Image 1 (cartoon, one colour):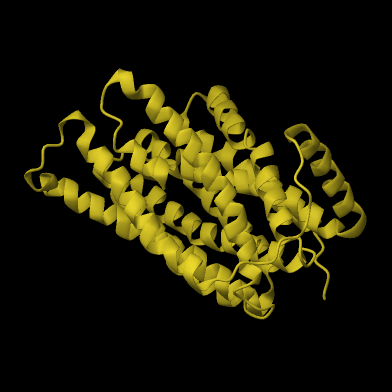
Image 2 (image 1 turned 180 degrees about the vertical axis):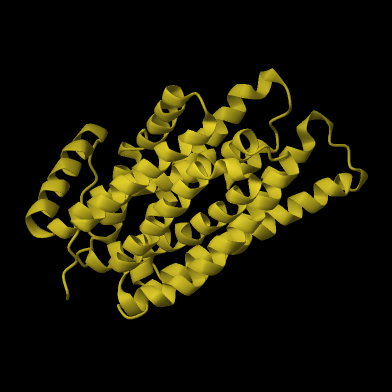
Length: 329
């Protein structure tokens, strides 16, 4: 939150570049750390019978919150910020300040109503010793919870594909399908709405059929929708609208079910450690989607075929997920 507040003081001048980049980088680090502990708390606010529903509710409401925040910004911009002087980057600075306020409003119930879990009792270590402990933890998972380790590896692959969808989606819309900036924003709102509603319902499906099966179904749907966008692109913008929204229909359920599955297979008392590995393995392969996106465009000379690069990463994650066996208990 402090980093978001700090961005309010970053003016539209080269002299503030280092400050702005530094605050964003530092905020990203803190966000990753907070996300690990936030995800680990799911075992405290759910039961084995409801963990899918709770995870889906959390992801779904996150998408809805994103829509509301985006709509507020669009309204403010459409109203020309109600006559406020927006020179010197003031509009973007106000957005950063609004994000900080948004974070405070919706984070305080977590600190107020969710009790602190007891510490695991692990001794703090230095940075270098931390890598040794990481390797030891991975070897421990290989011996005692191999299904958890396989899932960490498989999810790292397909989650990078999901990141590619978010990263390059707007580029595909604008370059390959000729969307205007306003159309991109409208599509973004529609995509978040579809993803949010789908995720809310997917949580109940998760508890009924299991998170692994839901992940496999959703990844398959993403592969089909993504390939349709690429190979039917000559039919025009409607292909992107339909295929893109269908693809978004499955993105949220994959995210929610992944958290649900990991919570189910994490050894009791080690949820924070396991979700930390979840974040670490995801970052370790974060080069895959950008690399295949670039390679596909370089080989074909057309931006639209970058979609195939991203979907290839999703498909690789799908194949890896087939080898993940979840214990019945």
